[in-house]
Each structure stands twice: as structure tokens, then as C-alpha cells.
Image 1 (tube, rainbow, N blue to C red):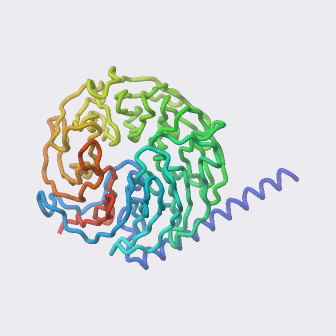
Image 2: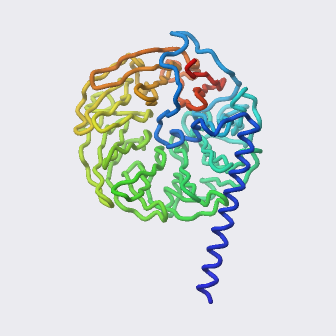
Length: 450
């Protein structure tokens, strides 16, 4: 009898979630029709886009930018406050976070929802925040949009699940109060991962709660895993090796692979990084996994089912005397033969995937300086690069070198870092447009081929 009841309850819960998901789908379909969006276009509903791999897949995009060296013409521009988090675009709406009404290290953190067609702010959710972390200038984590919900994590560990339609709070957590999290130096950064009914994110809590899985509908904790003295910043990633789905968590002491259903550890490769600087997204290429850190350089891991070992790694732990790729923030592009990424002092570099040997480097896309960076977004047979000076560049990257095709100003850099003006927010690519922000505005620029 007990077995029968348990089975009935599981079926009831499954059906409830099924119909709930369908209700959310209908709500978002209605929202799409009302806002004039289109389901045919590929959205950018969170960190890395629809497939979380930082690739822009829409077709019908310009081969060269409409102006050269000048400010790109905007579809719209909307004033916002400070923040490092990039925007997300889904169902005809744009979601971005900022810090408003700042006084010293305190202010009002906000989650904003804008109409993607004209930039009108449709709703905002705000909450007070007082920063104790370095660079106290707004949220860092890109919101995630899924099934009619917005998931947002603030720099101080405030996590909200909001209605994408109204902005109403569905559930919330505070990592410090609820999990005993000791915040990392630069705050909570990693964008959460949605997997079926789970929302998986870095928490950094006590009691083995470095990573926690929540029920995405209710916020109920489903499982927790891993322990580390520091939290780290790289987002959780889901990859498949030898037919086995694996949740990859790169944290300051190791790269770990977990069973995404229950948090069980499959394998772990020690890789202690200085100052907890595991930031760029881990990249899969075949049966290998690549990561790169500012001080400690590159690491290539060979994965064999539920086992893994070091394929090759850099030998330098210096940010200056580098022997491979020492990225601070930008995620490299990795394919079967070559790796393209931005090193510690702004050098755009090409490495051999099999060995890590450097093929070439250049400062043409960026400039030279500590922490100088540019984001790399593949599109068809070329790349879009967005550097910290606010330039948008179309270029060819190949083993033969860097070939710049077109460059224009996307947004102005607004933050002073090491006596230069910068912008460190990753743009979103959707609706045949690029959506970008600085500390003063968020803009949409049309990049559809005419």
C-alpha cells in the first residue's frame, strides 16, 4: 500500500509540473505575441546565449558594420545604473540588473525588464544592498530566463526567482543568511544553470554547499555538493562525455564533474588557482575540457567517461611571464585544432589545442594593460569581438593570424580601472541585434543585413 501511495504521489507531482510548465509556456507565448517578438529568432536568455556556449547562430547578419570607427546607430537607448552583468534577451524582452541610488557602498539593486522593441522599462524589482566586496559597483551575474521566470543573483548573494511577466517575487534566497556563505572578494558572479526542473548554482555555503540544486519552481533545495575554502566565479556547465551528462564545476581548488541529478562526484582534477580566479567558462572540445586562469594559466583535461586526467597544462604561474593563455575574464573559443583567447595583458592569442603551444598573438583587437580584455563571439565564418573600450569588431581568427574586417563604437567605456576607461559587461546577441550596456545606458543596435 505504501509503495502504491508513493508511486501515486510521484505521478501527481509529475503531472502538476507538466501542467504548470504548459501554463508558463502559454503565458510566454502570449507575451511574445503581445510584444511583437518572434519565436523563429534565437534568443539570448542567459549567460552564453540559448546553448550557453557564447555562439551567435542567427542568420541574415551584416558582414561589415554599418559605420567605421564611429558610434553605431541605436534602435534605442535607455538610462540605467551601474553594473557588470550583461543583459539577457527572451520573448521580446530584455532583462538586466543594475545599482541605482548609490551612496558610498550602499544603494538599491534592481532587476529591470525592458521592451526589446523600444527600450521602455516594463517593470523593475528592487532591493536594498550594502556592499562589502571589492569593486562595489553593481550586480555581476547575467539573469537567466526560463519558463516564464527570471532568475537573478546579486553580488551579495541575494537570489530571486521573479515572474518574467510582472516582476513579482516567486521565491528568494540569501546565500549569507540561508547557507552561511563567505562571499568571495568580488562577490557572487556565476550565472545559474537551468536543467529540467533544477536551478543549479554556486552558493559557497557551509556543510558541503559549494554548489546547490534548487527546485526551479519552489526554491526547495534538492541536493548540495562539494566543499572549498573559496567560492570562485565560473558558471556551472553541463557537458556530455562518452554519453554521460556531467555537471562541470570549476572552483578555486579543482575542476569537478558531478552527476547533475544528485551531485555525486564523478571525477575531480586538482587545480589550485591564486586569489580564487576561476572566471572564464570551461570549454568542451571532444573528450577534453579546457580552462584558463589569470595567474596559473591553461589546463587541458582528458575525460574518459567517469574518469579524467591532465592532458597538458601551462608551466607559468606569472601574469607577466606567460607561456600559454592566462585569461582574467574573457572565455576563449576552442575548436579541435586551435584556441583563441585574450591573455593577462590584453594579448589576443592563438594556441594549438593539442599542445597549448602558442601560434601567434596580437594587440590589434584590444590594447596593452593589466586585465585588459575582449569578449569573443563566433558567428558563422567569422567572429564578433567586444573589447573593454566599447568597440565592436568583426574579424577573422585563424591559425594564420588576426584579420580585422570592421570596427565601430558600440558603447562608451564608463568605469576607470588602472587609469583607463573600461567596460566589462558581455553583450547579448538576439533579434538580429546586439544589446550592450555600460554604467549609464543599455542600448540595442540593429545588425540585420539590409
